[in-house]
Amino acid sequence: MGPSPAVAEVRSAVRACLSDLAAGDLVLAACSGGADSLALAAALAFVAPRAGLRAGGVTVDHGLQAGSAERAADLAALLGKLGLDPVRAVTVTVTTQAGPEAAARNARYAALDRAAREHQAAAVLLGHTLDDQAETVLLRLARGSGGRSLAGMRARRGVYRRPLLGVRRATTAAACAGLGLRPWQDPHNSDFRFARARVRHQVMPALEEALGHGVAEALARTASQLRADADCLDDLAFAESGQSREPCSDPAGLDANRLQALPAAIRTRVLRDAATMAGCPPGALAAGHVEQIDALVTCWHGQRWVDLPGGVRARRRDGKVWFTS
Image (tube, rainbow, N blue to C red; front, side):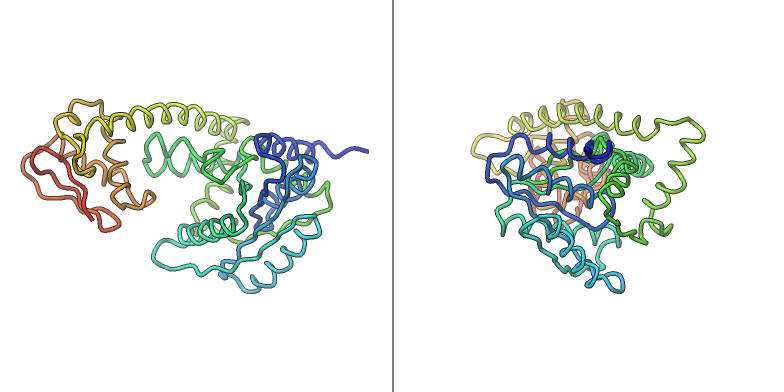
């Protein structure tokens, strides 16, 4: 008897995600032990050898819960039994400089980056699902984020790939059940101190009840449409960024008059990219920061500089906007 429909759907999504890789390439699955990433890891273990690829796994112990080290070791052993090799269990230190969710995410990605480099992985697979995408769009909408943020998570970004963005969370749970795998239930996922948990367990069910089924799919579809628009605007902004600098001049200086003539959607992207290139952490550069920089162009009346995250300063001088650190 063949695999269950859920198992087949997850495997199909992973297979499509890996179709452009070369024989012998190593693919790592980032696995927390939850249903989404566990179904992903199992699918990779099945699909990779049949596609001539090597498959490994990485689990990250954030050290935030009692027994996390033992759980990470058990999960690493399970990934090995599934057929993944190499498998790494990495322990990270979560700082308190950012919020707990952001700090854990930053530490996790730093660990995954290191694992990818050390093993020369062609891709690292992440288990985000369609439901995660919908929740992300809602969270960013509530924060007043711009079009790029509302475009949600990319299916691919650098070495990272998210093959399950079109797969529902219920499907990954069913896939684990069909394979006899018992996912770990992270208590943080039901802890209402965290905004995502409130969106998952309160907001999404309320929207489904009020608006009918299909809300998650509609939000994910909106993200996809916004992503296409944002990509186009980013390409235009990238081309304009070079035009706003004189040949052989300091790359930090942007011509203010040329910037002012641009549509706001392009101008703010040019300014955001310039700030990022000067050293601003992208995740810390908020819309309010970009508005302050934009005022140096559109509402110039001799005001002082703008202090930005990462120790970067934007100021207008000699008809240009300069970014220094």
